[in-house]
Image 1 (cartoon, rainbow, N blue to C red):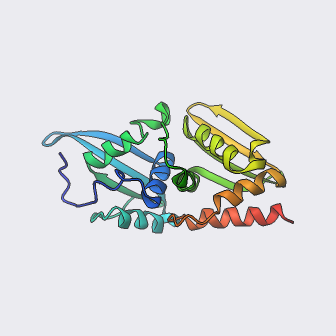
Image 2 (image 1 turned 30 degrees about the vertical axis):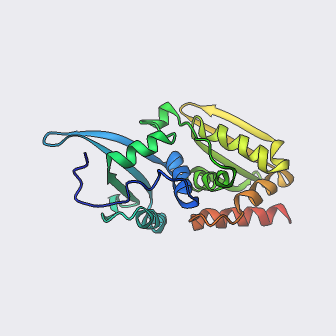
Length: 218
């Protein structure tokens, strides 16, 4: 039972769509599900996504897509957070691979129809991915809890031919990272990530990918 006075579409994650799968990927990378015990109400289930304030517009998009009527919080001067009290949302996320304390317990990325794999990958990348230069050479990477970078590596290998090569997988518990280096290898990975799926992409990450792709063709 939810004791929140706010409303939201608690069935949002139940039916896979480009938008819901994108936000699922984002949540697997940068969201969390946890419980809190309150004296009057017992155990409450919470879903939270916290971003830097510069990305608050993306949280507003998530709030709008979830039809959530609550406000965005500002826990610090530099952070914005969307916190939703909803057992239904949390259970739906858990059913789709999220785990409580996922930083240490990892995630289990669900099987999806072929047409929804990329939106989920875009969501995960927008949450925890990075594109840029490393020692003057193009690099693209994704970090996160165990299960997510491994899934991302497998999908890149399937959809970006050159991305099958030059992949580096590292694990420094509890964070795992997969990365690709060099122009010829990074370019097809970025091209795949920049494909238009209609997902609500994070503008800063798209621009980051575009700038790095331009370097690949210099």
